[in-house]
Length: 279
Image 1 (cartoon, rainbow, N blue to C red):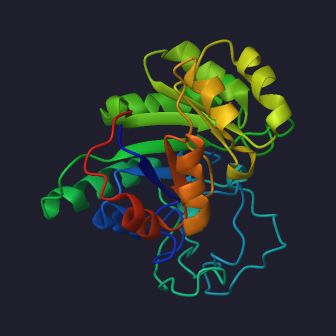
Image 2: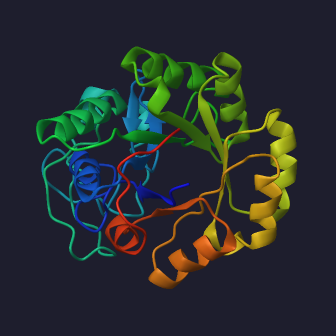
């Protein structure tokens, strides 16, 4: 099986995260799975954003003033999408000095589907893109940063169904509740659970109530024992966020099925092009 390379929030060393340009660049590099983050606007649009608020260093206000990194008062769940789209979120991040400055609002998920597939088709790229959707959800933030797990799952799956891309979609989250609710609505989709503490993995799997296709831990937690435990139940494992050559090679040696990385170009140079990917 091909060692899978996922572009974390797109090709971040080239363009600001979670932008249409970053996702199209990942496709151009040869990546065939992109990881992206989902939040919800006040008018229940599914917006691609890592944070549930508008802030620096990526964003500036409608008048061109860069936003503070500390100010988190512009909550996306309190804003209609037309107002969110007025903010420019194409400013480079200082952690990625080669990022290009672009003009970009936080895109709708539907726009990502349309643009990336169109980018690939326009130049005859081989393969099809798989979209790994991380639903940003927190048990203590229901009604503050997002709707209830039931409503959240319904909104995301309704859009996925309307897109006609169900066979190329993965749903994952740190919040097992929203993954479980999505599975109840459509058990035929591909699901994953994100893990940041090793002691919680077995407990969260039990609470999930079904065996997901993926369990994706922080790379610092990965060892061969974890890989063998998950593989015994036919669960694949793609650690995040793996950014150095040494860590990439270590993950493969430990039995991971692939990696989620900010530097897909580096991973591709190590492991080769990903022309086809399966959900």
